[in-house]
Image: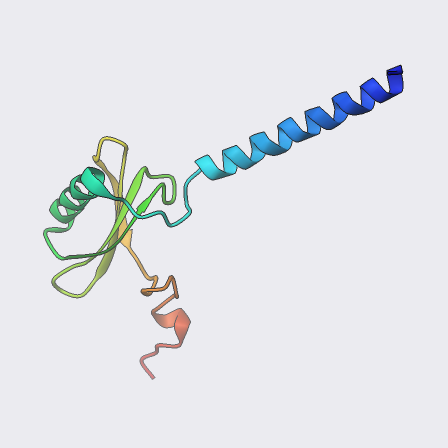
Length: 115
């Protein structure tokens, strides 16, 4: 093999390594709507319900929005709250969630008004 062929093969291999590495990084970043399952589900649900004071779990996700786990709860007064948990199931945040059941925005921006 001549020098040019070796150089082209090396460059192609380097590009392939970068492409695979980028794909792994994206896959590892979470945010893919993977539900929490098994013992992790029980622990996440318990922590989130304790944070909200009760309610009904609507959805769970692994790796949502920078949190290790996210639990969406409809509280007894009808509000929907998303509770974010760290890898040890400690609450790191919670906020009103204005996404509908299929991720559709609800509220004033979706056409609801007081008119």
